[in-house]
Image (cartoon, rainbow, N blue to C red; front, side):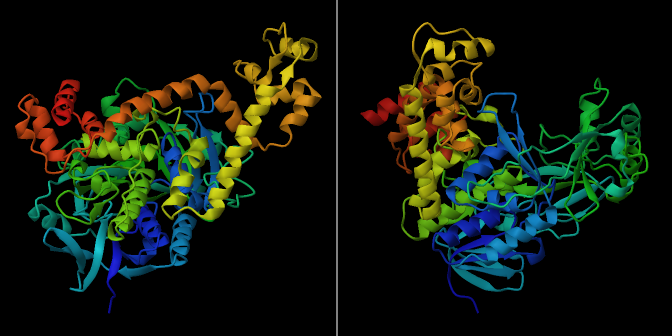
Length: 620
């Protein structure tokens, strides 16, 4: 009934979709197995993509040839660039999306992808021979052979939903949990754990009073994620902001005795940085109010997502508390919020390719690795799909460095440090964030994406042209020398000091108060110079000029630290032979099995002294 596939991807969430698309587009014969074909690419929680640090990840996925950026643009109802008041390293794109169209666009994109087949059923176990995965077995007893498997099970592995004192099995509301895989992996020697996440109630937008809230419109002109020519909406929908108050908090407190979180019925590790509303008012009792983001679910629906009100309290408590929020006095609730517990596998059991250490050709991606968020899942799926394809076709693996991409930071953190809570990406996790800006993701990664066979020739051509124009524009800035009589009046008007001799536009642009937008107004010659470049090129040029010393410093630091990655460690190296290693380091190194001295240096519990000791030992 089935041919032998190169890669089987289990699960069709954000990780599974990116994984299947990547492997198929690179030339592998791929089977995507999901329990429900109607929920491919489903946004299980909020209808939005991107945000702080997450937006950088989406742009990186797009730059390499992944689909998330394109899908987000096609289903966008609002775009905002966050942190514009800060430096460009902090700028983070975010889209509000039409939930139904997002999933529809994912399915359409996958159905147009060559080499990709689909099957609707639950995978109950893996077929493993001689510590190598060779296929999967479904709940109907079908055995499907393959050369590699990518598990992207999301919250479905033994998922349990909690609402007040009620709990029941499920991977998502109205969808059953997946069973069998966790138990088999434990038998094979894997360590597992439990995590939890939550979601807020959904309400009827017709029952809300928006006049009592603050409007949050999108950016104009409308931005986008993809570096391709995606079509953007002609108009945008607004989101709204309101707040909880003391009355809301008192209503919620009435349900604390029935809370599955406070009563200990939820054992899983929850996200510290994205707490439930009951956790917020319990932990931050001194706060008089908490922000609530009122987010529409799409163009053609009245359903609204109540962001900031994630909860697992009884449904009646949720409803009574919602009615106390300004603008929600007459609210009608579609369905209550809930918490969900699910199995995950500590990611220190993985190689940097996301292949498991215990079973060859088996890859994990997404929430199975202890992460949270669509974007974190999608980029893991992309990398797992790429590396699964490369492995079965005897090609070198792709491992992104911490200085190359936020994706590299995320995977390096997971594999070397593990996670004690659902892992979420922040700009603070990236030590080279001036290098890893959202605006230069294509310049960093598209050539690499083309080299591995994922990004198109058209993308490569566009990037090479962009690089050429940026170089030319910077050179013209250096060559153009403005005279005092030509520009001093304008400089004084811009509240910056005049020049005493001819000065290059390059040096003038380094001044904090001078932008390219101001320079073009200084003189007609300068205006003519910049007229041949579009806004994207000019933005790049300005960032590179103003942040040149910082960028250079980070590049040198990255080169110095990453030189350690050139020192390889054999997979079967016996750390017990190195007596000078600390006991903690020896234990961690035997478990994680780092591939290089550089990777070793980033493992929690391994000190600089341990790195020095092993470097000397290997040098001998």
